[in-house]
Image (cartoon, rainbow, N blue to C red; front, side):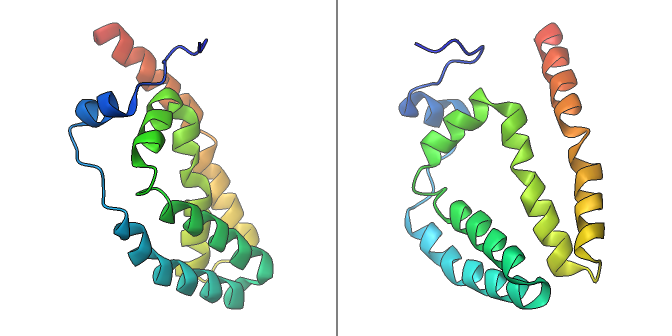
Length: 131
C-alpha cells in the first residue's frame, strides 16, 4: 500500500490513460551509438567526469523504451522529480553545444532548475482547483 497522493497505476491502465503505444524495445538499441558518441565527445571536450555523467544519463535514457510503462507510472506519481530529470540533460546540452566553461554551464543549469519545483507545485494546485 502506498501513502502517496498519487497511487501507482497498473501498467495496462497507464497505457490506456496516456493514449499512446509503448515504444518498441529496439528503439533503445538505436540510441546506443548516439549515447556512445556523446559520452566520448563530451569526455574529450570536458574531461572524464563529464564523459561518465553523459554515459550514465544517456545510458539510462536508452532503457526507457524497455520499461516505458513503469517509467510513465513513476512519472505520473512523482511529477516534481520527473521534471528534475531534465537537469543533467540541460547541463550536458550546454556543455556539448556551447563554448561555455563547466562552471558557467552549471550556473545556467541551476538557474533553470531552481524554479522548477515551484512551477510544478503551482501548476498542480491550479489544476486541482479547476479540474
